[in-house]
Image 1: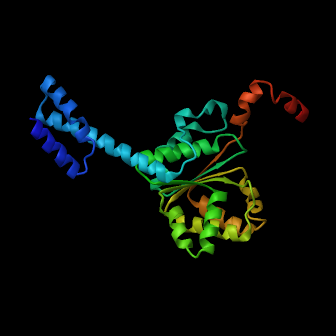
Image 2: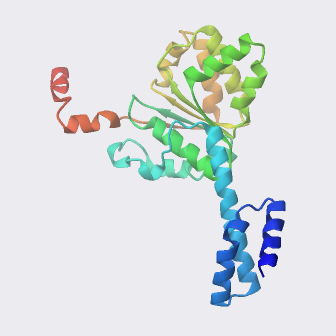
Image 3: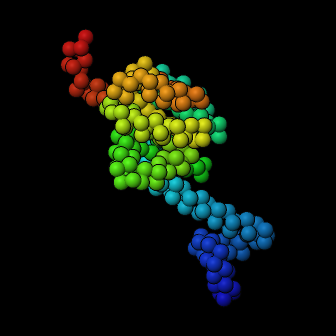
Length: 259
């Protein structure tokens, strides 16, 4: 029996079934105790191997994604941001937007949960075995500019094009010069109708000219492609980061001064 188990483990390793050698003894013992059928035993073994394969895939996808943290929609406090249509967000969580090549644009002031929602949808994407990649706009432009100067722009562009979903965070906090705007436009064009983008910004669409150093032409061209197939979620609410401080009365005097 021991030799047989060793041979099974050896076959499993040859086939790349790494989980089976780890759980074979325990499943075989339980199968003997419960007197289950051969097909039930095989199903349990394959179920365990399938779960392990999915876990390995998820780990690899999350490593590639470079998410700044792991957040879920279950952890999002919709009651604190009543301006958000929860049904619309849950519809996006079905990931139909990916198959339809649609974009998601999250607008609102700092701290209202834009990045949380973007990351949560990114996690959902990875769980569905799709590649997702997260970047801030400043980091993306820095890396693209460096690649351009080193004559390897196409190589770097592939990072932002290959993912099924590209998350671009913090658009609007700093203006982009003409060179940076051109690089950003190139990414948008390359992904247009080929892959989804989740984008967060603290600027309304009417202010996007300011982001691109007053160049309304390139701002319009970018918005034209982003909004062609898209869902916009405009969050109008208070900052989560300041919520606890307000409760503690730390910001009370400042709020009173504003009034």
